Image (cartoon, rainbow, N blue to C red; front, side, top):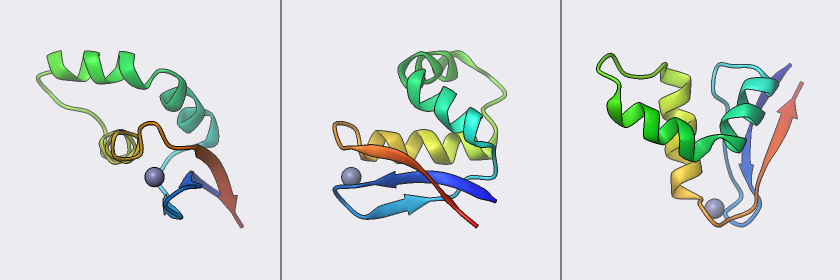
Length: 69
Ligand SMILES: [Zn+2]
């Protein structure tokens, strides 16, 4: 089972390689993580970069966590 973000307004979705709880955590802490990421030298995990980019592009939109079998 794979989980991802889905923007209800753009009908756009991504499926980062991570768990539902991590996606939930990132969505709730988006701004904190973005701030921390700015100060990191080593960079973030790929899924996190991908997910943050999606949340950023769809900020202000209704982004939900969906799953596909
Ligand atoms: Zn959107």
